[in-house]
Amino acid sequence: MKRKSSLISQQMSSQRKNTALLAVISLALGAAILSQAGLLAEAVQRVFVERATFSSVIALLGLLLIVMVVRTLLSYGNGKVGLRMAATAKTNMRAAVLQDLTQASMPSTLRGQTGGKVSIALDAVDEADSYFSQYMPRMMEAAIIPILILIVTFTEHANTGFIMLFTAPFIPLFMILVGLKTKNKSEEKYAQLAEFSGTFLDSLQGLVTLKIFGRAHRQQQEIERSSLGYRDATMGILKIVFTNTFMLESIVMLSIGIVALELAIQLLVFKSMTFHTAFLVLLLVPEFYSLLKNTGTAFHSGRTSMGAIHKVEQMLEETAGKSEDLNSTEGAGTSDKIVEIDNMPPIMELDHLRFQYARDSFELKTGEITMGPGEHIAIVGKSGSGKTTLLHLIAGLLKPASGTVRVNGSPLSQFDENAWFKHVSYITQHPYIFAGTLAENIAIGAGGNITSAEIERAAEEAGLAALTAQLEHGLGTFVGEGGRGLSGGERQRLALARAFLKRPAIILFDEPTVGLDLHTERVLQRSIAKLAKTATMITVAHRLYTIQQADKILFMDNGVLVDAGRHDELLERLPQYAEMIDIERKRGEHHE
Ligand code: ADP
Image 1 (cartoon, rainbow, N blue to C red):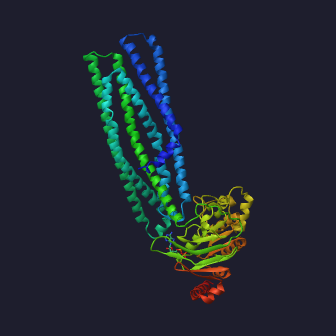
Image 2: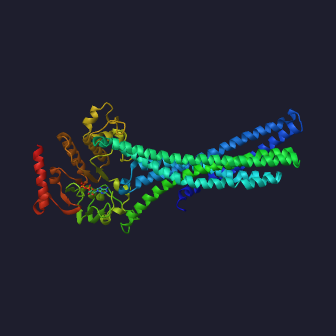
């Protein structure tokens, strides 16, 4: 239970000033409500009972008008403070979610639906709004103003005070009962919404694949199913809310009726009270109940918000738990990330690495391997033998379950992540292109202060000049989502241009498996070679040429790093390797 509200209490403690402001405004609002009722009762008493002239009450009416204006302003102020609190809280929560997503480890990033995460980051955080903008101000008002009203009513006419005191608890009692019900419902609604958005986004992203495999229709049904689920959950909540409102209204009407009856009897039958008192009390009673009733609505939206906030918390806790798991396996010395790295190609060592994505599945194992500064390493092996996994371990994108990756003699886990990635470029087969111009896409990750001349040079070195020359807007052309599409070769050249701006000490390269045209391949090869002159380069290699040129070849078989050495060495002592090369060679001849 303590954990559940921790995010809220965190927000609350960071917003003490606003909470205090809410209390002060509520107090003033209470005073305004009381004065308004008092002035109105006085005016009516004078005009209708004492038959005073209009001019004699004009000052009174003026004062009443001012009090009413002040009351409106105070109400507005309370709302404003609530909105400000909500905005701050949402900004903080969204930042926490984003930070969580960006700092999460690779495995946890890959887990779960992207759409589901988007839904939490956007919708759930939005829904948290009403906790601060509605629930907080209303609760503050409800905690202060009804007590003021009660005090005045008791001093004016104790009987009514008792009636109010007796009926009031029914409202919160009832609210709590209903609120508990909606809380579960709204958590359910969140699960449904996240699933719905998840299915939707994932289907959109995979639309081409789905179409090709004739699955688009099935997926449509899937979307329909989860959208119906979401609708039902929403309707369920609405049903509870409407019943809730109806019951609350009934209780309030009944209570006001009882008070009015009592007042009428006192006034007309027993003649035991003045008109002024009766009228004043009758004005205050509806205010009292309407405040409590507002709390009911606020309580409901507060509950919905709690459901949403709980979802966000769950997500934050989940990833926090996961990364703790991962860190704990690394052993001592992980906390002080102090090791510095300069821009010289480092010595890298693999020391008995072990890694598994999940229990009882694929396991990666290595022995001791040293990769000298500036060496060009090729990782080879069949598809699924663990080449990419090894590359990710070397990059620090995955954390080994045991064993160490050492860079210049220090474990990789002791490096500051940002400092490390500043010196690493990873050119995947499908580099991600962000929505934006070509220039913006190249400049990504190179830090600030990049001139357009530098970007142009990088593009040229990566062999993009021919492409940009064709384009009307050159490097200013929009690419990525909503922009011009890029071919596989162009994407890789873009990734290369990013690397040319960065001039990394370590290059990780996932060589294209599918054949690019000869020209593109030459351009790529030449650019990579240029970039690799000043770096340690580790390539998941498929091209015979790349393999033969490598200073060291790491041969992977079924997750095990079997052997490492130069091409001619491996040819001689590793029959599996010779066999692989033989197949590659034949395939190469076939293609020519
Ligand atoms: P390669 O690059 O040699 O084709 P990978 O390193 O990509 O091989 O994959 C090695 C094995 O690990 C495969 O059996 C693959 O199914 C599995 N694998 C790869 N990525 C994941 C992942 N994110 N979660 C679980 N298993 C994975």
